[in-house]
Length: 321
Image 1 (spheres, helix red, strand yellow):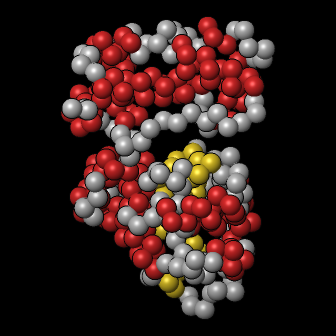
Image 2 (image 1 turned 135 degrees about the vertical axis):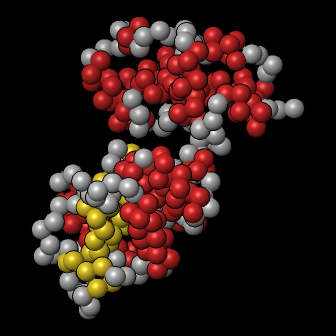
Image 3 (image 1 turned 90 degrees about the vertical axis):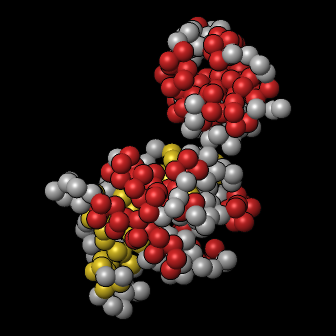
C-alpha cells in the first residue's frame, strides 16, 4: 500500500529543498516495480497561503480543512535566518504536525526545517540535527532537544532530521531504503551521485556517553557498563544491586541517554574495538575477546551495523601508522 506522504510548503520555504525532496520521491516511484507506487505524494499549506490550486504539479491541500491522516510528513528547509519570525509565520502548522504525529505519522525535517519541527515540541528529549551554522541558535531556542551538530542525519523512533546542504539526500535515501528496500535506495544514490556510506557517518563519529544529567541510578549503570564492558555476559549481572526494577531502569536509562542499556553496551564495546583497530597490532580475534564478545559473527554484525564497514576495512582506513 502506498504511503500517504505529505510535503508541507510553508512561508519562507527554500525551493531547492522542495525540489530535492520531490525529485527523490518521484524517482523512487518511477523505479518501483510493484503494483502500487511506494509514495502517494501530497502538498499541504495553511489556508491563508493558498492562492492557487496546484503547486509543483500537485493539488494543494489545506491543513485546516483536510481530514487526511498521513504516514509520512516532510518539512523542507527555510530561506530566512530569522527563525523566530519564520516560526511565527508558520505557527498554524504546529498543531497540525502534533495531531498527525499522534495519529501515527512519521516526521522528517531537512536542514533548517528542524526549527519548525522543534517548535512543535515533538523533538523534546529526542535526537536531532540541522545546518551546522544554525546549531548555536537551535540549541538556544530548543534546549530540550538532543542536538547532534556533527551528524549528517538523525533517526529517533519515527522522527528524522538532516543537516544542511547535501545531507538532505542522505536522509531521503534512508527513507527510500526504509520504504522501498536497498535496491531502490542504491539506484537513487547512483542517479543523484550520493555516497551511500556517508549518510551512516558512523565511521567518522565517536560515541560520546552522556554524563550531563542528575539521575544517580543511570549514572551508576553507565559506570558499571563502561568499567566492565569486556566481561559482561548479561546486563542482569550488573543491574541486580541497583535499587529499581529492570523495566524502570531501562526506561530511565533510555530517557536520559537516548538509547537502551544494551545498545549503550554495544556502543562502548564497538568504540573500544575501533581504538584497538586504529592503535594496535592485535588480530581481529584478539580484539573480539578483549571487547567482551564470545561470538565473532555477532561482533562483526554489530560492528558493521554501527560503523558502516567491516572491522578489517576500518583498520585499513583509519590505522595509525
